[in-house]
Length: 169
Image (cartoon, rainbow, N blue to C red):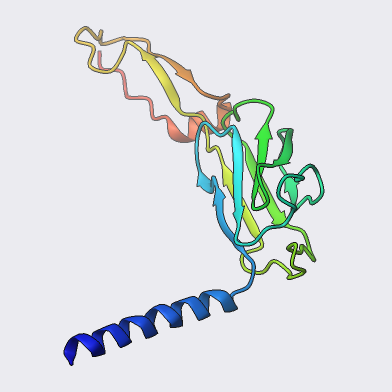
């Protein structure tokens, strides 16, 4: 008896989750990257339902308004997966925003709902390498350090984040 009740309760839980999921309507299941990330070359988006015909995805639907200082090209990998390839790896200091176009419809004629805006940033410059390197055993008291960054740093940002130590003589 306990086993039979457990099966019924489990089946109801699965049905409730499936019905709740179906009522959400078409949406974006995955958007990558998001937040602060380095080394971006591509944006990848997966929709919950097909937006373009399988086998003929070429340029039929442009799902996003893209606001980004870097250029790229959009394409459909298949009926549910959209890709935006940048012309190069994005440098530090780039912010991109992707907004779902108003009235975006699936092949079945349903409007895409859910989250409408996505963004990411490559963040500020980061140290790629330093001379002398980390863990060096011979650092002079008047040592000069050379930093190789992954992007251009402004004088203002450096002065706001670097604190020179007093010189002891």
